[in-house]
Length: 482
Image 1 (cartoon, rainbow, N blue to C red):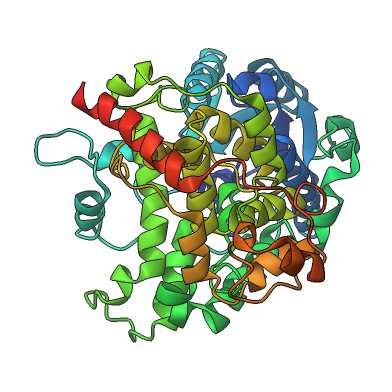
Image 2: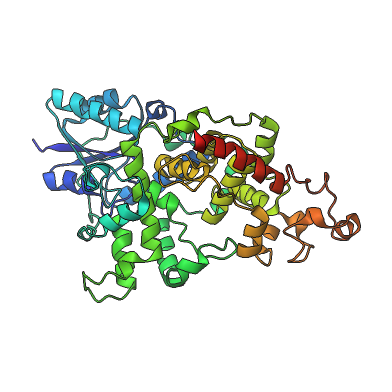
């Protein structure tokens, strides 16, 4: 009797360079791919609405990729342990393979899964298909985790380059009969409201979409990434973050694609391309997982304990204005509207809107993190936590407490012509490049000529940045002095 292998897909929704899938194939015998929807096993962080939209379409793409290789994707609802054991019994499977995740709740669940499978005599093996360096493999000279990015990344660059990515199997051996499966629609991942209708015009979830996006970025924007990435109106970023989060493309694939484009002719010790701004940015992704692994409470608690007593404002009206892009600060509002419309926001703008929430409005970073978690298609627990704690000044390698982004100056520097603002705040489109960043300083007559009426077509500023900055500096200084 041939050996049957279960391939348990999670955030590794690709066939190329999928180490768990290759292990299942190499073991010999039929392969039964399975995806188990069990959001209740994610503790306090089940996937948000935008993530579920992406997951639906990514699974649809994976189904097609598997079908072209002669197999199906079995869809089930959790609980995971009972589901895997039931599938093993029904299919005669003697082994289960999966790729590791690194969020605290997922790691705890996976350890229980592995133990339960082995107790039933099943082979249970996991692999790394998500990171260049797993969190426990990188330590400082004292054997402790890094807390600052620069020495962390410098240490990573002393390691050997990741291995070449493995090719996808041309075919997959199918079992004689298939276990029952839910239809994808039965997982109810797509939002019931029409909120996400615009996502499909912007994104193409799935491995094919990931490869196309990577190729487009390397052809058009990689060479100028260091400068262009800061300008939200320009196509200067990779936009690979959701594809990476769902594992539609792996970090090893990106590493070697960059190496090829950088034109190093296969010289492994030529380091300039390894220190490129783009790979360094992906280094921050690695660092985020490093921190989350070693400090698992940080998604809800500040890494620096003195911030636990910080007196944040509880102004729900201000929070809603921020969420809806109605703060009266054009760049902040443009970013929040881009997020709501597309499920994504330019990284420079993410820092600006986050600073505005925690420094200008003094609303807790946890509220911002929750909103991003629900509305970002690339919502990633490690990176979301690092970004918000960095902005609030309460995490590892955090921005100094006295760094308060001035949203107007940031707009003038990185969106000087107002192109990004006009795209997402069309009610301000008739203002000139000089005027559009500070409409509150214009006369009522000038605003009327541009079709702008404060309180009707566009909101007045919710706070004075100059005053809010001073209040924030005083409040944060008290925490620092503690």
